Length: 321
Image 1 (tube, rainbow, N blue to C red):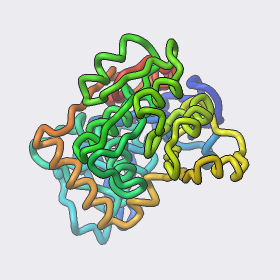
Image 2 (tube, helix red, strand yellow):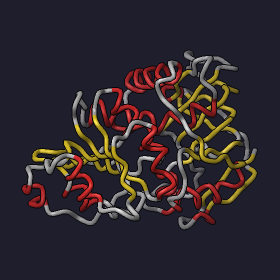
Image 3 (cartoon, rainbow, N blue to C red):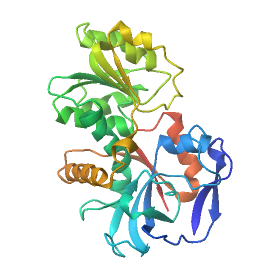
């Protein structure tokens, strides 16, 4: 089968297409024919070495497809079942061996491409707004990169919980798109001062929470726009990791700073299944709008990484083996 492999960390060219043996399921594993693999910033972090992985490896932590083979002790799935996963490496391939406890069944009405578009980013947005910083009606929040995959879903889930949203985008062409998702105010970071716009929008009070997946480029503004006892939820670092922070900076407003990882919230199979079922229910009910920016053949994974890291994409990127 074909798989994208990384033998040394680096830029997108570190992704190499290779022919490798078909996976054989170990006890407790399921081999899935991959129909769609999500492309996420964590894949770029694995490729670059920011999040070290044993070499060589097949990247990609999100995908969906059809069960092809079952390992011993697997009783929850059968050959032919449609499944999806998030948080298990190996998705950039025609087939992947996934632990059965990390798989979730797909409802009939949810396609593999929808699942690979929504699962990782949708679960992230869900836990951020319901557990990391539970939002309540009337809460005023800021979402950075509102046109991105997580940002789009954060806005929609926050609005569903009754929160009011100001969002940032990286270019003028994304403003109307994000406003249509429910953001009351959209700030173009390339032209506007985010802090000034946010303080004006809140009457000088600041926001209850900032959801920041950008990192170093936005961190200072995110702190500066917080209301007293506000929370900065730093869930990503697409512009690079934030430098060490003096905790005394938080005393300016008795701020809270958290760096959550989705995988700590879905570590237990029951939690993964519960959150996935809720996400798929919202998809089927039409309460979430998904947007795929581009799809790429598996062997063009490097081009997908370049597109994602350019900051010019809107919505999700998928690889289609």
